[in-house]
View (cartoon, rainbow, N blue to C red):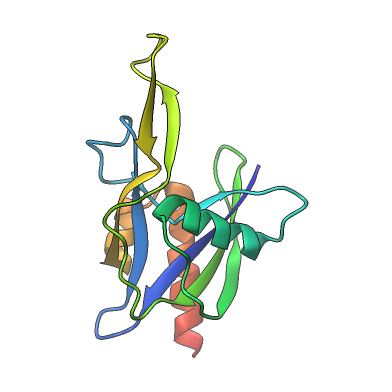
Length: 153
């Protein structure tokens, strides 16, 4: 399974990245390991950056900023899934507080009832160390890759 996402950053005295808290009942009361880079799956007929832009819009409900993006790597999850991450300078981007994309699932489990939930329920600018604590484990190396890239500039 292949996914692509956008990790926005902004520089300053304390550099930050934009991450999103996963929506739905499984994540509602979790913080550590319950956040993600806006990302999603794509197929062979779509370029990774195009998929990352599409998924950013689908999850956050707003278009990704029109900036230059650079690929910082493809990172494997323990499940075998792989996520290709693109970084871009998001200075001036204000994350939305509503209008997030939605998904439907059976809830409560085995009830036969369907419920709709937001794909993410909030997005925030956080420092690199906070991002490492909050992100799902497979995405944490993207923060290291971004830091290394920024150190080269």
